Image 1: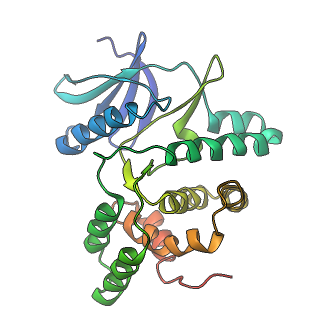
Image 2 (image 1 turned 135 degrees about the vertical axis):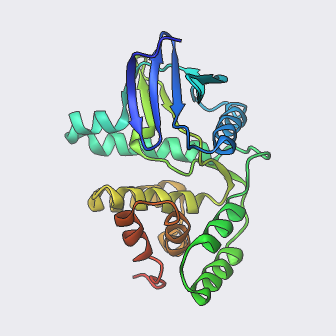
Length: 249
């Protein structure tokens, strides 16, 4: 492999282009189990027929673990939104349609969202009463088995040169309740400082999917608590501010 062209730099990982492949190289301190789980997630989601880069291999590069996938040439949806802000509403429709397409799929071998969230809530340093309340609320939520992306945002969608949208980064994929996935995306817009876009997104998703907004909002404190575990201090502070929000207008 000749890794001299950097595509993206993320926390603890760097993505390179090598011809027709993309190589995601992880830092030495990254969990091997998490890397192998990410590759397995992506392989399982491939079987659903969604447009995603195919896994080509898991290997080592200069002593570091790496995942090799197809390289998709194009621009991310985030880039297109930045370049063409007047077209945001059209891009948002595409964004929501793609997420609904994901939720329409089943992948029975993916980890279960409720199990993952329960584990992460117990890892927080919230007081025992709050943890108990959140886990009780989580358990009471309806059990679904839809594919959930877990980090669905415009950076993780590439529009290829022929116009086909591809969905990237399946490291957080699970099977579970779609509204939890929607709550996560809503909070990601907030974390990016795009509150107006967050509200537009939630309104459109609920309209197109015939989902009550209040139902998605009930997931917000649970999702925020579970996502706070490995967040940066500033993000963690923001996410935990949602934990005590129970009632919504």
